[in-house]
Length: 245
View 1 (cartoon, one colour):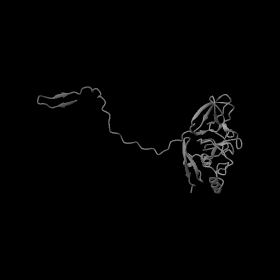
View 2 (cartoon, rainbow, N blue to C red; view 1 turned 90 degrees about the vertical axis):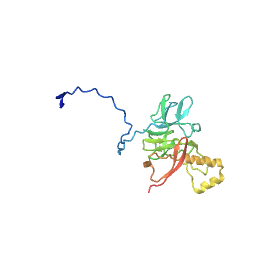
View 3 (cartoon, rainbow, N blue to C red; view 1 turned 30 degrees about the vertical axis):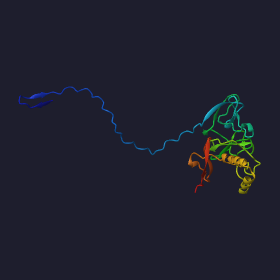
């Protein structure tokens, strides 16, 4: 309560009740200051499942087995000694499948829960029954039939799948050894002189396709360096990693 003076006497001023709330003001168009950037890294994500597909197994398929496409939505164990299987690779059946049952097939990307004859950072191939059962994951390329690099091992149970081209193995050529490398510089020079351009190109492609894919994480680069494929199934370039000092 307040009292004001007046020539006509005192005026008594009484406060009225509170008014109704006002309407909301307009939104500000001035952005606020940016928040602080966190320097704490988040937890690592779980390995992905890669690209998947399903087919019906023509026979029993053991866990960690590569399979090839068959007619009528079927799949069979990949056999590098079988010429009819070349170029038909679908991917890896991690958990296995019974004959006549659906098989889940993973093809490109990180695939976990696998097993085979390999160690971390190894280049991986499809077993032909000599270094591992037919269709299994191995680190030694077949010596006859066809050969296909299918990726690189990250750990003993995780691989980075990146299938290359399936190439015929020409064990009679002086250009390429059965393991996929040149014998000596003189052998290479001799082969270029005596072989046809088509033979030389096919042999070179066979060697280059057998190179391991470049690891995604630089921490996984081998200490000794090496030559790697860098790309995907549609094409790639060559990347040389120098030895660590």
